Image (tube, rainbow over all chains, first blue to last red; front, side, top):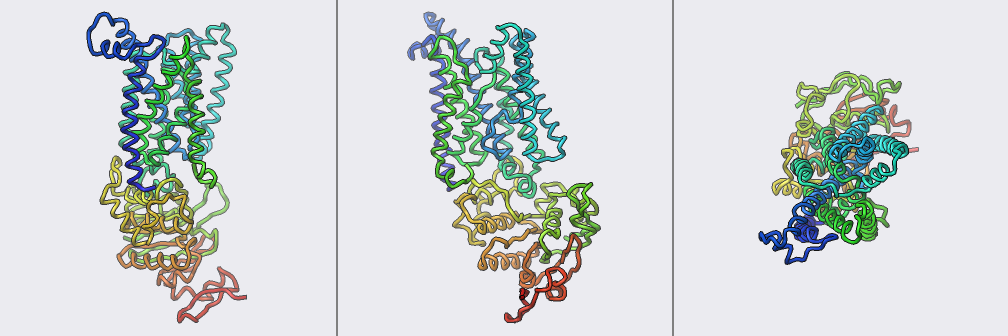
Amino acid sequence: MNEKVLKRRTWISFGISIAVFIVIFALALMLGRYRIAIDDFFKAVFTDDSALDTQRSIIVNLRFPRTIMAAFVGIGLSLSGLLYQETFRNKLVSPDLLGVSTGASVGAALAIVLGLSSVLISVFAFLMGLLTVFVTVMVSKLFRNGSSTILLLSGIIVGGFMSAILSVIKYFSNDITTLASITYWLMGSFESADMTRDYILMGVVAVCIAILLLISHPINLVNQGKAEAQTKGINYNFYRGLIIVLATILTAISVCFCGTISWIGLVIPHIVRLLAGRDAKRTIPLCITFGGTFMILVDILSRTFTDSEIPLSAVTGLLGTVIFVVILIIKRRKLNEHKDI
Amino acid sequence: MNIKISNLSFKYEKKAKETVLNSINLEIKPGTINVLLGLNGCGKTTLIKLLSGLMKPTEGTIEYDGRNLQTIKIRERAKIFAYVPQQANVTNDIPVRQYLSYGTTNTLAFYEHPGKEEMERVEDVAERLHISCLLDKNLGEISGGELQIVLIACSLIQNTEILLLDEPTSALDMKNQNLVLSILKDVAKEGKTIILSSHNPNHALYLDSNVVLIHDGVICDEGPAKELIKVEKLKPIYGEHVCVSRDLGYDEISFKD
C-alpha cells in the first residue's frame, strides 16, 4: 500500500484513538456500581466542594488508580503481543508465547497457597514469569539451534510444564478459599490497584516504550529474519534478545499485578497492523493508544453491569473473539488467496 | 580491496562426514566480476553465504583487506558486502518501498529511520531497475521474478563495495536477465566487486568475468571466462552432452543429444 496513505491513516488513527482514550478514561472514572453524574464528576475533580467528598474519594482512591493500571496493563500486553508476533514472524502468537504468563500464574498460586500478602503475590508472579522465560531460553539452547522455531517450541514445552505444575498446586490446595483465590487471580482483575503499584507499572512500561521507540527500525529488520537483518547491518541475535527481554518484562509486570489476561495481546496488534501496515515506528504508538483504550473499556464492562466483577479474561475473551472474527472477515480476500494474513 | 580465501573448508555440523567445501583457496581482485559455476549442491551457495558472514568456516579463513571476515562487526560488514539470497524469506505484507528502504540501514544509526535522502536513493535505484511501478505493492503481490529484481535493487541501495549474488537471474525472463546482467556490468565498471553464482555459463561469457569452477566442494579450475568456458573444461562437470554453438559469433554453451 502507498506509504503516504499508511502515514495519513496512522496519524488519523492516532489522533482519534487519543481522543477516544481521553473520553473512555473519563467514563471509567464516572461509571461503576456507584455512578457519578457528569456534572458531579467535573465538580468533584475541579472544585473543593465538600458535598462531593464521597464522589471525589471514589474517583481519586478507587477508580483513578484502577483505570491507570488498566491503561498501562493494556499498553504492556498489546506491545508485548506485537513484539512477539514481529520477532517470531507469526501473527498468531500472544504474549504468553515463552511461558511468562503460565510462569507468573505458578508464582502467584504458590504465594496464595503460602498465604502471602498481595504485594508478595505480585513479586512471586513477576519473578516466576521471568524465571520461566529464562528456563525456556535455556531449554532452547539444549537443541543447539538458534532458530526462532526452536525457541517457540521450547516455550510451548516449558509453558506446558508450568501449566501442569499449576494444576498440581491447585489439586493440593486443600481449602476451598485458596482454590477460589487462585482461580480468581488466573482470570484477572484490577481490584488490587493502588498508586504504588501504578507507579511501578508506569515506570517499567515507560522505560520499555522509550527503548522500543528507539529501536523501532531494528525491530522491522528482525522481523525479516536473521539473514536479512545481519546482511543489512543489524545484529540480529542482540536485537532479538533485547526485544524478547522487553516483551517478557512488559508481560510479567502486567500480569503480576492483575493476573492473566488473554486475547488483548493477540487482537490489538492485528487491528493496528490493519490500519498502519507493518512498520514498528507506526505500530508501536498505535498499540499504546489502542491497547490502553481497549483495556479501560474492558475494565468498565467488567465492573459496571453486575454486582460482583466479571473476570477480565472473560470480557477480553468475549470482545476479543468477536473482534478477531471481524478482522478475519476484513482480511477475507487475502485469506482466500492463501497469502500471509 | 582484495578478498583472500585460504584453505577454507565447511561442514554443516562438525561431526558430519560430508564436507560441503574442501580446502578452497581463492583470491578475488577488486572491481572484477566473478562467476561461480558448478552443479547443484556443489557448494556455490555455501561459499557465497560464508563470504556474506552468515556462516562461519569450519576451517580456514576469509580475509578482507587483510582482516579476518569474522572479526569485522556486522554493521561494518554490511557496509562492505551486500548479499542477495537465492530464495528470499521476506515478510509478504510490507510494501516494496519499505523493504527497499531497509537497504539503507547500514548508513543509519540504530535509532534512525530512512529519511528523505534514503528514500530518494530507493527511488533512483528502483527507476534504474525499472521497478518504480512496484514500489507501492506488497512483496506478496509481486511475481517471483519481480521479487528477485527487488532483492537485487535492495543490494544496490546498500551501496557496498562487494556484491554477493546467489543465482540472481534464476527466476528472470530473458529481458530481465539481460537488464540485470548489464546493470552488473555497469556496477563493476564503477569499481565494485561482484561475486555471483550461476547455472548459465553463457552469463559468465557475457559478463566477461573471472570464472570459478566448483565441483564436489573443490575448486577445479579458475580463470577468465573466455579461456575457461570451453567444452573440454565443462564436460567433466556438466556431462558429455555439453556442446558449443558459434552462431552468435561467440561461443555459446548448450546441450545436444
